[in-house]
Length: 68
Image (cartoon, rainbow, N blue to C red):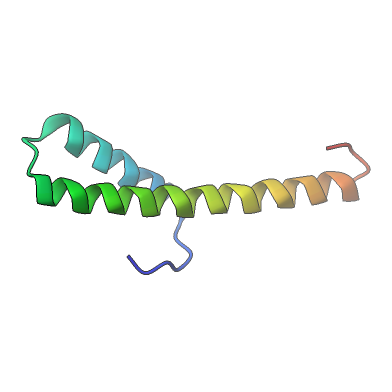
């Protein structure tokens, strides 16, 4: 999966779909591995976006005179 900036909500929805697939499907090992790898990539991308958002919030709070 090429990593360009994805919409957070779309990424989260896709992650939920992958989770449902694992919960509701007869698991094919090869397909499960592909979906697991895709899920790991999504988790990494979403964590990165959350960290960026957190950094922006901290900066905005400092700029506004608030505390971390």
